[in-house]
Image (cartoon, rainbow, N blue to C red; front, side):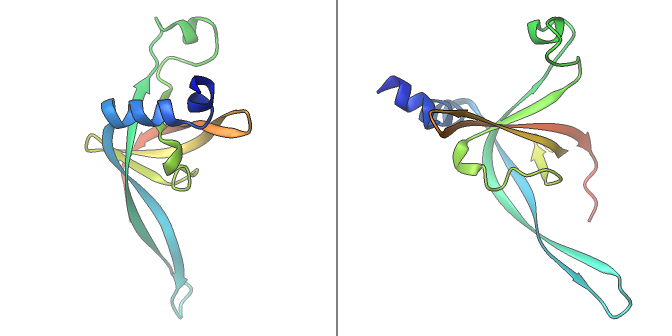
Length: 125
């Protein structure tokens, strides 16, 4: 049962539910063009739970060469994976981050974690 719970994301989802931070993912929901060819995008906001971590030079993963100091990730629940896409934006603790890369941890054919590499930025419509 414990391996099944890990493999289908229940353990990580519950941990994020207990200790994560409420945040918003801004999802591009549509694009229209006016008669002059000017583009206008529409967005929808999704309330999710995540946990942000920025690596520093003293972290083991940086010393081993897996990450660089300053790399920032947000871990999301697997139930939110449909919103975690490259170029979507996340508002976390009043700061905006653009998703630049998404990794899904997969075990036994099921997602157990969704990890987004992010860059701090300024949200502009």
